Image (cartoon, rainbow, N blue to C red; front, side, top):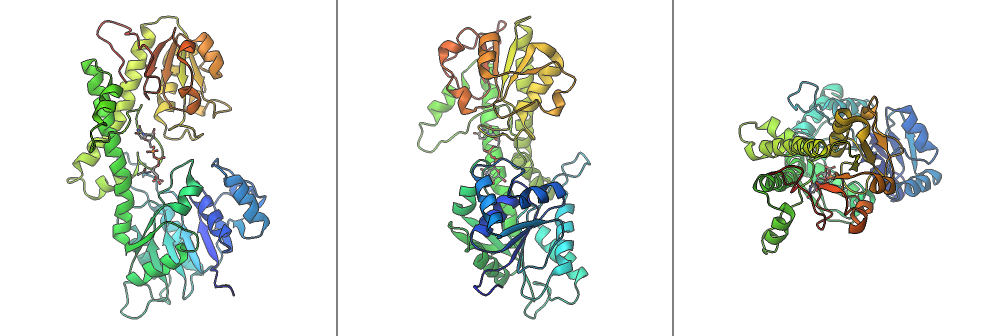
Amino acid sequence: MQGDNKPTVCVIGLGYIGLPTAAVIARANCPVTGIDVSQHVVDTINRGEIHIEEVDLDGLVRGVVQRGMLRASTQIVPADVFVIAVPTPFEKDGHHTPDVSYVMAAATEVAGVLKKGDCVILESTSPVGTTEAMRDLIAGLRPDIKLPGLTSETPDVAISYCPERVLPGRILEELTHNDRSIGGITPRCARKALAFYKQFVRGTCVTTDARSAEMCKLVENSFRDVNIAFANELSMIADRMGLDVWEVIRLANRHPRVNILQPGPGVGGHCIAVDPWFIVHGAPEQSRIIRAAREINDAKMHHVLARAGELIEANPGVPVACLGLAFKANIDDFRESPARYVAASLAREFGERIKIVEPYAAALPQEFDGTSAELVDLDTALETCGVLIVLVDHDVFRVVPLEERARAVVYDTRGIWPDSSEAPSKPGLRLAS
Ligand code: SAJ
């Protein structure tokens, strides 16, 4: 520890979670070294710049780099606290098997510089048991250090799991104000991590064991996935019955104990569409609702694609605007986005009839290469396209007045234009959602 009791910190992984976390810790006057495998990322941060988009992150990073509180490196350095925030994707086996190899690679690096008194915290979303597996890996690499839970003596280091729960677009605010669940391999480990988080978290920090904290993170995102699946299933039922799903949900939500979420073109992002599978993988036979929710939310994307295709075919020769590529409103993140999947599939099928409007994109993503789809601005789309397919509820789309879209046939998968007349494109087809 430094003289003023501020621990030195090493944050491993400088992505959407690691970089904001490193910056917030540095702002609390803990000297932080951020570690990333990418030289480009490291150089960018050391210039005081950022490689990702997030509200207010640029100013914060510039400030802490200028004050010398944050520096980046490709090489791990000794520290008092290690925070691991690396990706946990799926393996490429097609079975949604969690791939914890980046976590284990980070733990191997940490083991190389670990010393008595250090605190290791895993933040990456992980299958239950990963923190213990990480502890076992370190134990094998450093027989000179007493690890928690493996010795009846006082351990030399603390190991904990503490998931982030921040919402993209609100990361800095939520990093500071959200409550945190801190799971220690032992209660003592949790208390040590708690003392660290108290330096920069204003929300309540609750301690538990590592496995419960791991499950807690997966459960939070599965809860949301299941609830969105309910809304998406309702939207497909409403399509079948010729009902307006938005009206039905609006009415049902007037009940004091009913709060149905919003249907959309499917669930995107790197968390909600991924994390539930970590539970399914751990307990396949018991995870029936959780698995079904994943399947329903994926099916919704194909439902939207099929409906959009029918509408386009029913309006031959009419230019079509797909509104939005992002995985949700008001962000520039197009990864794992159902909107991007639907728009790119339509571009491949219908070629130059497809125009894309995405105020957060400077160019179309790679999967549009080879198609004749064109990125246009919103005004051009409203003036020239007779079919409008709303895929993302960006604010800038939401506020388009009725008179600017009244002549177009609209397929609104987000329910942002309740006043549009969604003209049936063929008898029996009513595009409710
Ligand atoms: N969506 C709907 N209908 C809704 C709400 C969301 O279709 O009513 C869709 C969105 O359009 C998007 C997807 O779901 O495609 C996910 O969006 P989101 O805003 O629900 O969540 P994320 O992925 O941005 O962030 C989630 C958050 N988890 C929960 O709300 C339980 C966040 O707090 C987590 O920190 C984050 O995952 C994470 O990193 O795990």
